Image (cartoon, rainbow, N blue to C red; front, side):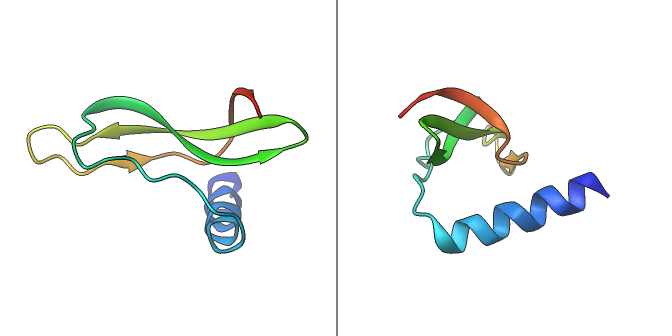
Length: 67
């Protein structure tokens, strides 16, 4: 249930907050910026993109620094 709520929140945020896109050449595990809030930078952990494997990203719940 928490995953469903997280995906819904991510979907809603993508419509409201501009975000950076990962480049097509990104391969392996990486963090993708989602938004800044309260001085903190929230990102999501993504994995894949190598050898034709599609990129999969988790919810925007990881704090990766400050804005």
